Image (cartoon, rainbow, N blue to C red):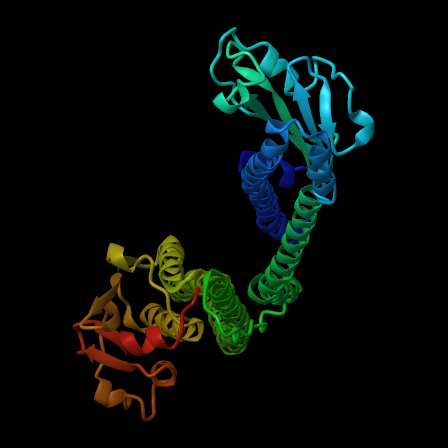
Length: 499
């Protein structure tokens, strides 16, 4: 495995997935089939040679028995006739009948008669090196691959019926040699080897084709589809989905499903990002419009007020009414301080309006921190730690935050409060945002609640209704005011946060 990893990880060699799988699958099969073919051929060779040896032994014994009568009668003519019959067998290359001096007495080849064999011939060495007086000398069987024949050697014992002509002291009278042709056997073995090779090659080719089809069906076609989908995703086409109608389910199918889920998540995030960006832009535009209205109405009114007060102070000074002039100038000074706070508050709102996509809790914290820097009154903030990771729909966040801004603006303008508190909590699957002050309070019935009258309250009611929330106002003259926004959290969560 390490060897294959080393090969496949070589930078100079680029091997695609199909080739790698084929190499890992086919190479062991080819080696296995080669080994099986070799072992089968060797086993067949051994079995065939063993059968040929047995047949050769039996044939040699039969042939020696055929010559026995001629040898007992010392009938050379009969021996010649028998040898002639032996020579007709195509599987017998040569038959020799030898005496103790290794001289050919009779042969299937008449030209060999009287020939003295070399003592190094197979069969001669084994007999003539036997210990003196050996009662039996085993037959010698020798297969010569170069000559393609098998030699069978049978010693001729000095039987009792032979001792009328030969001394009884001699244990052997000679030897019978038969060379059995192995050409046909070799041809059969070669043919079997070729057949085995062809069969192995055909099997390997079938396995190769089958493996290629399986790889194409199970892996390649699906990886091609996945690769094409990933390229489209790389080009930011997050609507891409991989069709998994592959009639099989495995790790690749699961991978495709995971990629589809990833694409869906990215597409959702992209849509959410666009939605949040749209909300942010709308919030900025809305805040700018609100500031423009306030500048148009508030600043114009403030400048008119300043002009009137300064004019009154000048008249008082010209009439030597210093106390009246001081009172008018003091009112001008306080109005400038109040207007400065209002302008700074407007700037805070403008800054926060560009931070809609940072999350409701972070925006509330930043807003309260900026408001407390104005110094006109102190706001306390209570948010449980578990709500720090609160996520919700961007549009709902924006409306809730705008309600908070409007409520704090009303506190600053109308309540005369010195301090207030803001609390965000989750209670019974409901998200609650409460804004409380210690100001002068008011009678909700007197200002007409949401129906008419107070413009700021109308805006807050409309925003709450827009996001499916409700607005509760608890106030009494001289006892401060509490404004609470209540929204079902399950509905808000299902509406999609996906930050």
